[in-house]
Image 1 (cartoon, one colour):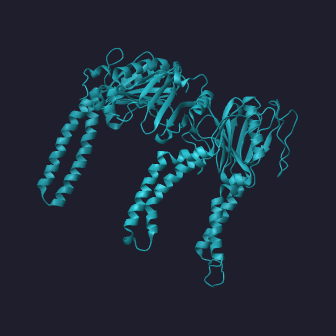
Image 2 (cartoon, rainbow over the protein chains, first blue to last red):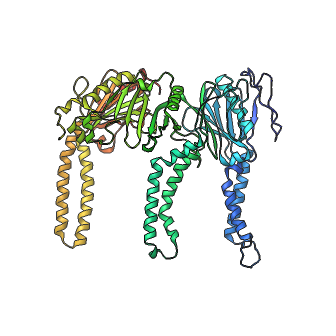
Image 3 (cartoon, rainbow over the protein chains, first blue to last red):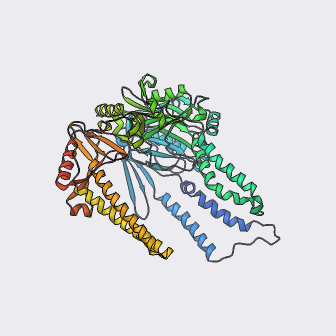
Amino acid sequence: MSAGEHLPPSSWQGTPTLAPLVAPPVAAETVVERPHPLTPLVRGWILLVAAAWMLLRDLLPDGSGEPASLPPLNVMSLGIGVAVLGSVVWGFLEWKFTRFVVDDNELRIESGFLTRTSQRIRFDRIQSIDMTQPAAARLLGLAELTIDVGGEGGTRLRYLTRQRATAMRDYLLIRAHGYNAAAGAPSLAGALDDLGGTDEILIRVPPQRLLVGALLSHELLLGLIPILIVLVVGLTIEGNLGASPWILLGPMIPILLGVGGFVSKRVIGQWNYTLARSGPGLKIVRGLTSLTSQSVPRHRIQGIRIVQPLWWRKLGYFRMDVSVIGYGSQTTDEDQAGTSTILLPIGTAAEVAIALQNVWPGLDLDAIPLTPAPSRSRWLAPFAQGWLAFGVGDGVIVSRTGWLSRARAIAPHARLQSLKLTQGPLQRRIGLASVQLQTGSFVDGAVIKHTDAPTARALVLAEIDRMG
Amino acid sequence: MPPPIVKGMDALFAPPQENWQRLSPRYATVRRVGSLVTAAIAFGFLAAVVGLLTENWWWAGLVAVAGAAFCAWSWWRIGRWVRSWGYAERADDLYVTHGVMFRSLTVVPYGRMQVVKVEAGPIERSLGLASVHLITASIQTNARIPGLPEAEAARLRDRLTEVGQARGAGV
């Protein structure tokens, strides 16, 4: 936004416009913002659809020659009607009593009509602001903002129009960090993307690669095998099933749910994945039905894991997962709107290097000397023996594990919380030990498996000095 | 070729400088009482069920004898397990070791400690024991020292809190 340019006034109410987005104003006027009137509709659309279906099902002629009649007026339909009406009234009241107030040094979210709640967020505690457009909101042109204050969960502002949400995000970021993230061109979010004019695109994953990766991942194939088994078993004993082959659907439902969840997380949630540098921060824009714009909190990353499943090795693709304090308790919608722990869903080795370079500048993964596991570890890990290794670099410690999925876990020394040296009875016979690098996140910590016992002890003693 | 048997594995879990400080032997009593009560209830129930089902109380007696044998083995095993615990306070970190079959050694730097808790159940309290529990930012850290005399537990808690504050490092 250039100097002195105001945003157009909001279209539905005469609320005051936001102050010019040039520099943090010394004495800013208090700005009061209301969520969009369609907010309760977006939040409760499933209930409305269900109620409408139940009503219309009886009203539409059902082909049996009888005239259409209203549903019988008994206690149940009356109860359902009251429930639907009550939820509509509740949603309206919630909307009416919710306000977002931008003050001199804090953001206040006032809500509730029975018990009034005022949630305050100081500007200097705001670390980043993500913008998400869940499926229903995207259709209506709305978006929600998730404000990250470094703890668990994030405060959500639901729902504003895209334009207002972008303006609010930029304004709050200026107040919090003092920079203008979109100096020059305005960062206006569209329905299909959310990239500002000066954002530098680092990595873009084409959808074909995402589909190929999902088809070749062994979670999907492991999910298909039970389905095949159930089908084969069912078809061969079909004689006993009678007239209904749909009985087969019963045992398949949990498997289908698992496969569906996997597809939603890896494909639908990561569609059009783009990693971009926006000002001093990194941002990920992704999603097919819900568009999520998520910033990467570089200083809170506890560890990164680079994974390569079996069938991706021929194609040379990797996946990167990141563990961040506070991500474990994020609630996400059904199509993975919100924060996700996937840093890069599928990428080539060059793209992995680019992502690493931007998250931890100065880290050269290939230059770290690796100590492989001794050959006698094949007694305990026959397939993984050639891959197991660990390496200590300047700022990080690297551990390689896994045989079907080859994983490299990278943890900075400063982020380790404690170390645990373990040895089971079989390891004791062979002279091996394992070291668990314990970090502060919900994702599995890194483990250095089946390494020579004296080496493990030396590593623990040396690492304790490096950690401090 | 059979894998070589390497001797001297105690070097792996040797204390960093001097000897390990051990738990109070009375802690074995706490564990044994708990284990005996559970075994008595379980085996008693099993013996009663077997006796009622087979209508022959010799089978129930056999189950009771098996239960007694289990209790004796458990008595011996718990003694070994309690003796395997050890802790050592160094200048900058705390070492805790335990385990008989699956041995482990946990190292926690003082600066990473967030909370130090002292807990005591009813049986422990009656014997004058307490456990110290260290909490860091990682949920995987399970640094617990059970079965310490109350005075030692209080001393450890105060010392750990004091050095933890002095060296507090953020996440």
